Image (tube, rainbow, N blue to C red):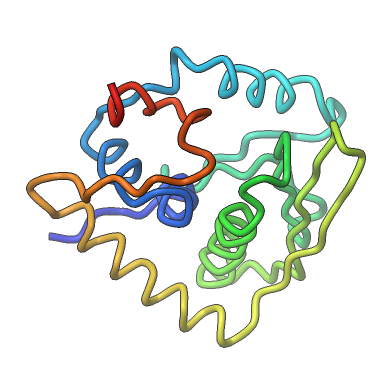
Length: 164
């Protein structure tokens, strides 16, 4: 059985495989997280003139687009930069598969007043295919993967579930 992979799932794949499994199994903790709330507030109050939060196929939610050529993803910090880049690469890949010629993505960090261009290479596309397959395997597990102690765990919305 194949499940539609979302951008959040790709992001969580890089952040924490256990979090990915919990999220996929409708165990959500974000609603009580102050950090998640702050991220949503930044998203809502930044780039007000842009058409934002564009949902495509109920699997990717793009923060905003410029002329259907450049995708923007708004983040509050660069702490999980690699996950953010791959989430954006996934969005580019999905849209290109649908025939939309996205030129690039941009990670926007409004609090830092920084931007970072993200490009999708052929190698990235091959890697994304493998990542999607691995995500499918993880979400089909009967039990969540073992927790991995990482520096970001204490600020994670799932911290209490994993450690207390």
